Length: 101
Image (cartoon, rainbow, N blue to C red; front, side, top):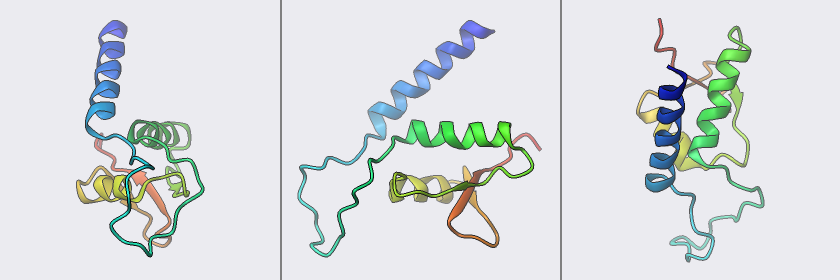
């Protein structure tokens, strides 16, 4: 089972790398008024890892504060597809949807 789990995690990581890359900093922006973020963006894989770890480490408060390193289109992707949920009182925090319930 452990080998199968490792294989699944590696395959998921490769899929996310191939299909959800970080934005290229060299590409010109379509909108000229967009502010350039100085934070180092993290990958979707790393975002999911943070959310999963928080869910298992602190199950009574699984919400993660959205930092500047979270790329907004990835956050939107997770929210629109029902993978993550916003905090009911603080829109700057998200958590993974509890599928096990």
